[in-house]
Length: 344
Image 1: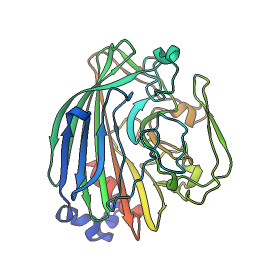
Image 2 (image 1 turned 120 degrees about the horizontal axis):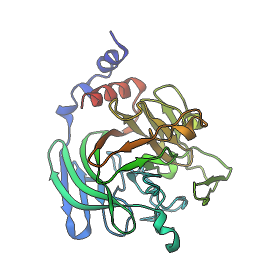
Image 3 (image 1 turned 180 degrees about the vertical axis):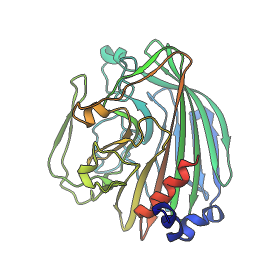
């Protein structure tokens, strides 16, 4: 019997009868506010935000089944002790650092006006579907544009939301279609990103400095508090800061929020470009899957560029699993979830 089959049979009702335990999902569009609320079992799980004041659409915030917030509050809200670095890190998002020379990843209100032309926007123009049920569905259309609103890519994304007593799942399926020739040049910052709550950071007392490709330096302050207690684990057994720049089918971050054990896992899909992905998983709370950052992650030994001719498209699929309770998801359980996701 394979490892994955053993994993499935070894976790009992947690996965085998998930459909029977699934809670009702409500997907509620609020067009006047440019957002869509997603509630599971009557409680807010997340909101899809797409106002013109944001440079990209995001899911924010993300909650566990018992209501704990696993994403950082800044910059859309304020929670005592939350770091205020990298203002472009908002909830859960999808974009890239270098598309046709434009930086979609680092764009935020903090970029000076005279530099904005170097950055790209993702503008959501249509909610295609909002469907409630045991699986909630949200589909939207957006355009990846330059400052002049000239379209480079059309994006169509489908979210599938589900949940049980101690678990929340987001499946994201994003198709990008080139309106003009589009070149993703291998770069560190991409593709699916999530900024974690303070508690899920890896504890450190040392300040850290990060410089982007335009020479903008960001300092992440070391902590003296006892909130941060997170750790990473990949499907290949890498832990802590050693997870960064390595390849794996999945990666999870885990720790305590209050008295509760919490984990957030991201699962790659075998049909994604450059599977298994590289993990841009930083101890300070950036948790990202980036298959197109190979040059940085291999110290220049190899690189992965992606080019789409006009009319061509590419699809990326990711699963995000948020669990809480006395025991967070084990590697066997994550292998089983990954095997199920691979069939989509």
